[in-house]
Image (cartoon, rainbow over all chains, first blue to last red; front, side, top):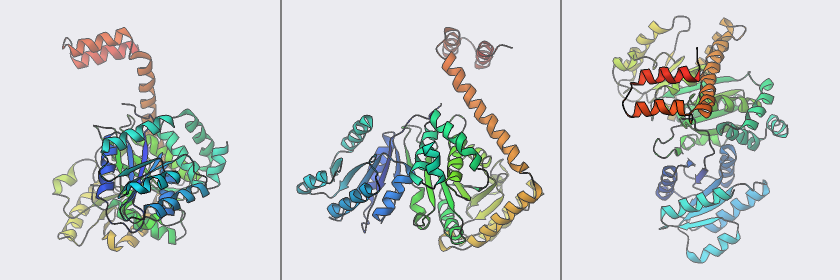
Length: 135
Length: 311
């Protein structure tokens, strides 16, 4: 059938020196099964590469998966670069090993959603769908 | 139009946005394409097809790196399947394009197949116009690697590369229609696997029946190690030369464009007819009869078509 309506497009990215991509792949798969188009970046992406991918693929969301404990500096760098480039139409969310004490700081940086390991997949899906509707 | 100007100036974000608009079938997108059209038609369009896992993305990565070194501006369109169940898609071709992705001026766009009624060609064609507007002079399209899609991809490309691995099966596979026919260049990738030389000979013996004017080269490659990439590049150059020499006025494209136009027209007519007729009682009545097994499908189609388009 004719099928050219708007899809939610998401980049799931693995920044920096983080080799653990099981979680990222599980989330990517779940979002796909929820009817979204998911671009998976592969491992070890620099922030400027992640932004380039987000631009070329014209995604609505950038999801960072970070297991290294460096979620605050990495996210900060991404948010700064997005601002620098004047990109305001892409919402960022973060998943991985995120201690609850860091959540306020990430929110302060402008992250739209935070999904620490153990978050039910459905919660992430619902979050994205609700934000996409508002956009 | 502001968007067009930005794309012609090389703004990637604007190009990406216009591609999305075409994917979504938006009127303003098509209008933008019409404005961009005079700036297109010069790039060499290369399609690459083959079974999943045969190494298409890796070959593209290596080609893009080499071509960039030669000063070419590269665009890549990587098509992956859409899930029939959820309509979602996992677009993962970039993962194997690590090298190309780092190069400034290489534009990679993933595209979900989306089950377009007119085939993926509709959105792909739009993306091609956009990438040409962005100044790319070599555009590589990676297709899903199965079925009918391949034929449609070949109708938007100047040159098609088909990738095999030595374990492709037996020669009955090769005799099936389509697989061999659409390749202008054939690559046997992962040629360190046993049986590569035999596979090459086998495949070569099947090709020569199909095409007489262009001698389809069969190239052994190990893309991951960069082996065979130079030969693919030479073959691409030779094929383009061949096309230009034999079709000084670009006739090779005329035929394909004609085919595409009718493909798109078929889709457009279908969409329009459905919009107008799907809820009308005359058509609904026929659908009901089919569902209740009161009439056969052929009779139903004949009746419905007669109502929508009377002789």
